[in-house]
Image (cartoon, rainbow, N blue to C red; front, side):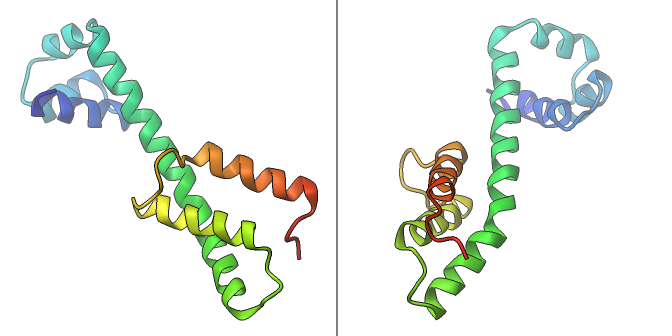
Amino acid sequence: MDEKKRKAIEVLVGGGTQAQAARAAGVNRSSIIRWLANPEFVEAITEHDLTQGASIGLNSLVPEALRLLKQALDDDDVHAPRARIALDIVKAAAGLAPAGADTGTLLSRIAELDAQGVGSD
């Protein structure tokens, strides 16, 4: 994907109009319309949007994960699997996540522990 298309995607995903995307990419609006008819371009928009949404969701978990990690450092009674999940969240947000660790997986693991009452205060 070339730089012009990347710029247009940024604008479109951010809620901009076709005209705004065209200006940002340095092309005519007709180019944006043509690109939007291309399934690969639309897929790139969808992937960018999903990635951006997942990143926002993951980042919202970081403050609680950091709180739990601090608690784990201060208190021997913190449940180890819960602390490992918190560490995975922080690593994922920092781009250091193990392969396959995504927001959905981490949230599922937390929900399982919550359902079991494991590590609750």
